[in-house]
Length: 471
Ligand SMILES: [Zn+2]
Ligand SMILES: [Zn+2]
Image (tube, rainbow, N blue to C red; front, side, top):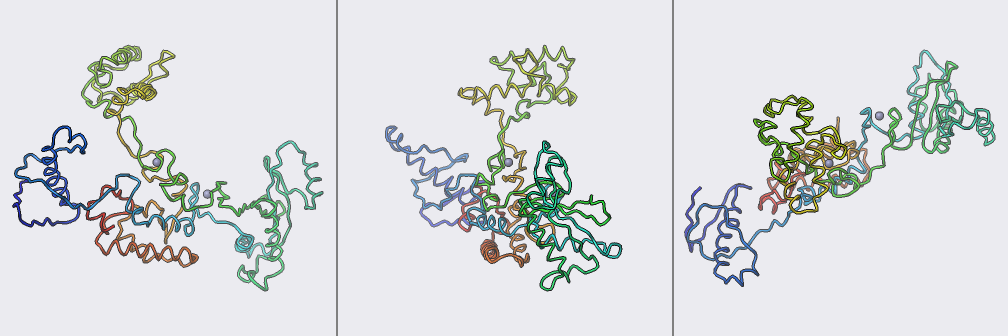
């Protein structure tokens, strides 16, 4: 690209966001003018001034000393995103902590807190009414008793505390009977709810209340209609999937923030990517053979011992050293990269252990330089770039399958605004509703100023100057 700009005239540069207007004005024209100006000072003075790099131009002529009034985009950290800058993320984490639903990571079913009322409803609703008009239930709660105590001793102990006895023992857990209740399955569940409920429901709810209390939030109800009493239904007042026996922590706002240790993925600490040895850089040329120096770091004098080890072990194992790397079988390549065991034990250590060993010596400058040549960023394998702990991604908002906080982060702002405009949070409390109003307002603004194509996860430092101003 060639341009002529007249001196001593007023020149305006226009164009769409991100097209490079600021790069031309500030990073090229101003930067060159400033650099030439600084060069007029003595070497002594110059050492006190910031060193200025030559702008990325082939040739630039006739630039006078320049003054710039700059728009600032001081954001340099990858922890700043459109979402954090606009504070929409702060509102989202409140929304997810208070207004999201939890999906079990084991079975994909919704995880709910059970209450005595919800359990009673479930038990009444479950009865196949025609065949079994009366259903006999045993309400129990689990207690961890270990395996030392005998059945007889346990029975005596339990009865001594005023309970009706032990229902059964499964492993180290004993199920203590709270109450036995017969409910009339022919009565529709609705008629059993609320005031005027039949005595059986009241008694059931009361038994469940006590059982939840004694069982520290856990209850087991057994169906004893056919006399065998083997069918067990588990309920929990915690966030607990009874089917998978997985416990979940109560959600707090910071679980949904990658800038908090509570929410940040432990592997990448919330950056979404990790720095690792890139084998593509270690073996950059697939046409080379092992004999011909396919493993690049071992071709230098400092590490030619590794090259010799590679060749001598390879001959013993029948690995083909005169075949080009890309023609080796997967198991041969794996052998080269992963090795067989520790170097100290006289085993073939492989490329991976070689780099592990280097990492251990990275306090030395030249090792750090060497490592940096073979390292590259890649998506974090633990969170897949989501930056958050897996637990945070089990929570969803919105209709249908809903969206995780990651889905929300990755949506373009225009369709996200649409989602929040149509999603109703009718069951939510006032706090959640006011958070939603605030999110709608901010998304509406961002779309009005024409930034609907961005998403919340977009890193601030990659925005153009004009975009930052509008955010
Ligand atoms: Zn489950
Ligand atoms: Zn991660």
